[in-house]
Image (tube, rainbow, N blue to C red):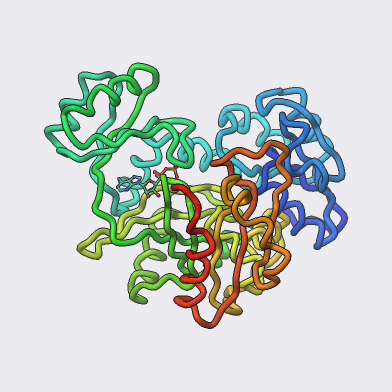
Length: 377
Ligand code: ADP
Ligand code: MG
């Protein structure tokens, strides 16, 4: 599909004003676009970088219409906006990403179903509508399995690991409040992710494969290029190609993968927006995941290939990491520090990240791990 080509100086409307919106806005402004952001939090990270700011809830129809009427194109930085409202907006305004990806991927059940339909490799799962369905999970998946709410989960929120029958009460509590899915808990060897941008005329551009370490289910560190066999990168691209045959994507998205102990690759989940594991691309690549996103939604040509200028390590800076490390920042020019500008610091809240470019990944990794050592997990 050929997308509307926007003139420089046009206005981009972003639903959501968190760090992803901020970094999108910064790329857009570099290219001469104006940015209007809608967010319920007056003190959100975008507040100081947007040309105009609409302070409203994500489901405030009047505010969404205002955003639409002031913008030449609309995008979003997070996937938990209402798919039906987005569908209505799509019929009135220029929203090249559409609503289908959001609709399918904000629900873990329909996400798994579309992955299955696309013949992607995923961990066995069972739908949990009520606590009776746990019997199915036990008989068809077996212990250990992980129960995840269908909607709204992120950074491990809305998930419980069920290792033995004695953990079932935790699962029951979750299912009684919300519909869930159960999925086999895999023995992981590694986690990787692939960030991809789809542009006008279905142009597709891949970022290099990213190796991710999570702690307490929150991304801790990303290493690029991933330390895996080349075949894994090719296999990951194949999974993405299968998926995009069935889902309408425009702009930047990321597919998260598991590699189990036998070396098998599984799709974990898809984020239909720029992703934390792609942040290294700001310094380490010739185009960042935000640059390519803006190029895509404004109908520009995408670069055919993304060049990794230097291997890189990205570490998230949670509140507790800032407490530990911020007095060292001034002595570490090799740490490219990003601070998102959130007003309230919390121990486990993502407050920023840092990226280090290096020719010696292993040595840099050791020294970063040492710096982060005092952090409780
Ligand atoms: P979120 O939306 O919170 O990112 P994920 O499903 O990606 O949810 O889970 C967060 C992390 O929890 C994963 O990156 C992985 O480390 C761990 N995890 C989740 N599901 C499984 C699983 N089925 N097997 C092993 N580890 C898992
Ligand atoms: Mg995840």
